[in-house]
Length: 237
Image (tube, rainbow, N blue to C red; front, side):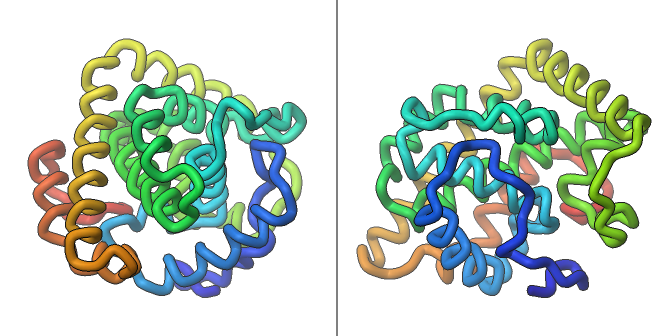
């Protein structure tokens, strides 16, 4: 599938952080392609690279299944430290638990919730670290196609591993020092998702939420306008 002008094999994403069944792997593959095809431009960060889509899958699975009954694959977690810290920050939050209760067992709602949550978290981190080149250089790999991804390198350099370790430490510190703002981000994301869900259900309980989200740019833009002040209108800059 072509994403950001690059062919991405949705069957061959990064290894999952969670122990996942073959059934759930196949289910995600069936769900993610039409989601991307609907071109949810308000969620470009979350759906822009192989790495970000892999993290969407992690969060989707924790949302769709009972997070307490899922187990981290420790071998895979060591390969993706940034993915792991973001997964933990999102899934351990109170508002994630509330959303999970609403969507558990509903694969479509779980996916949309996961995409929106990750979009807002990545935007928050992008804004926080845009002036810190060391951290931003490692973080942007989640949502920007790079030469390293295009060459399909199978092993990281020592410098890349160090950069990821620095980024993980910085992300953890930033969230801890700005815990109220981060909680507010998740809370507002939660409210927006609830609003989208209620509107969708009000129109037709059986109607897919995907086309609806595509047309709700005003709601998304209002969210960004209220939370972020930036001269750059691009979400993926």
